Amino acid sequence: NTNKSFNDIYFKSKDSGIFVGSGGTIFRSTNGGLNWIKSETDISNDLNSISFINNTTGFLFGAGGMILNTTNFGDSWNILPNTTFRNLNSSFFIDAETGWVVGSGNMLMKTTDSGNNWFFIDNHINAIHNLRSVFFLNSFTGFIMGNWNTGFPGSGQLGSSILKTTDGGYNWAF
Picture 1: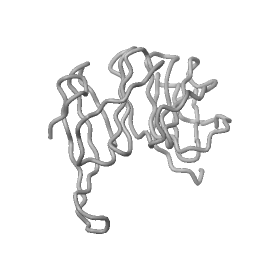
Picture 2 (picture 1 turned 45 degrees about the horizontal axis):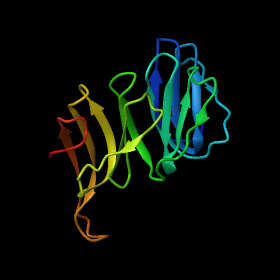
Picture 3 (picture 1 turned 120 degrees about the vertical axis):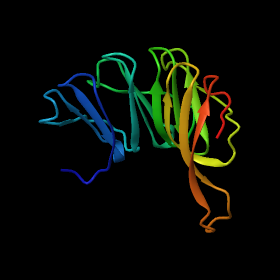
């Protein structure tokens, strides 16, 4: 038990898994989730999303643009340079090279070099303020969903939408 919120979980096999959460929470299991061991880090940012590109190399994404990577399935984590200070909410890799991450402030980033470099995509979606989830079927066709607000603050005009791309994330349609 803990007083932290849990945000994402990933298992590479029936035995080995990782979950992340608020306040920099990272836990690992090597016995199918029977026991969880806390990873000691100096991270206090909320961690929201886990993506792995193979059995050892993966990424954690979180609040304030936090990106961490591992090359040993979480034995250790490296903090990558910030490319944004927006919250990163969800990530998805279609293969070992190509991945996307979405976040607050209508933020969408993409990598084509296994997460070594991330670049912003101007997605031309002005109505959505907080992108919450991303998923791709292949390197061209994908979906994002998020929350929007078309009214003045406090007007209560909130909603959610799912958008689709067929060009790798450069253009999106409701």
